[in-house]
Image (cartoon, rainbow, N blue to C red; front, side, top):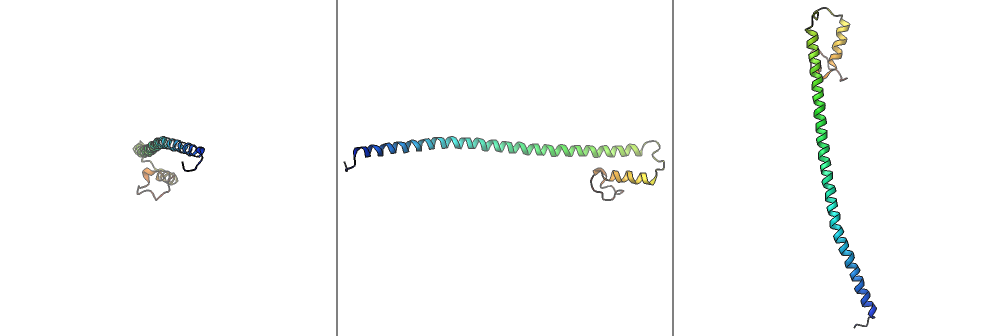
Length: 120
């Protein structure tokens, strides 16, 4: 031997085994950790996609509702203008207020009878 006590060699061997054990444990749990992180990232990606789809569906549904409201407004105007007595004179104040209210609707914003009105 090289002059080291016998227990020193045993201590070095035990320390090497402990270090090997820590290294193996870290290597094995690191693989598990990477797998868990991959699953979490995949879950986040799926959630992001679902959130985007929900947003697109919400915007599409809102647009559909707005188009339906605008069409209903146009249908109402057509029915009123074609009703019996629609050609009877209407007080100018009533006419002005009615036109003002109609012009606030998106369906009439581009109508030449309407001045540029803020949305209500």
